[in-house]
Length: 269
Image (cartoon, rainbow, N blue to C red):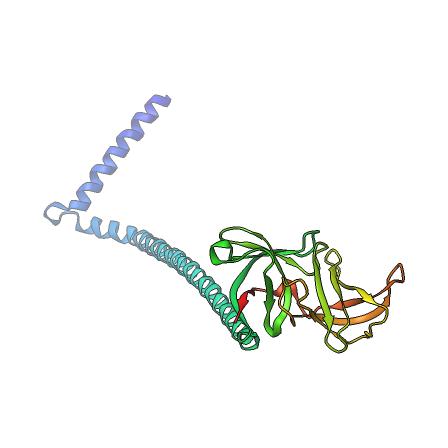
């Protein structure tokens, strides 16, 4: 029974296809009335199909435009970030050049031969207390040379020397000992570092006059450092532990962490 039904459906289908083809091709215009009816029936479906295809195409174009806009926005964002980076570098370079010009105007160039150097690294908190600069023995530097900034402020002395770089031992380094004197009274002694914590003016004779606010400069004793380089200002004065000498804490005008370049005194004029 089921097989008979399938055969009947198959035959009906073939007949429907046959008549459909006759109506569509319409030989000699015989099926014009049927063909018109057929076209009228399928017209709404054609409209729906066309509208759907147009919508899909439009959606595809819209999605494509979104993708293009996203790509262009990413490109613009990347270009903007590059410009921001370049502007920051230019601004930093401008500030650096202005700072350098300012220091050059305040340096004692009429007294010393100076070699400008860039600070490339530093250890301010550790026990070493040093700066590394980008000049070395190839540039004529040697151990013990004075390192200064504007207004003849002493930063430290050249320690380890390599062909292309050197380490500057800061005044706050515990290994640093510098002969100094006060500008106001000529009281002499030595400046010692306190493990990065500050400076101590030590070995001052009890008979020497010294008070808060006195300026401390290098004395030139020993011949290693030029005379008259500024070290700092006396903050307070007290007796040494053995009460044989006076001591004073000294405040340096330097902000070591902000130094970008320093000058090495390579000789006198």
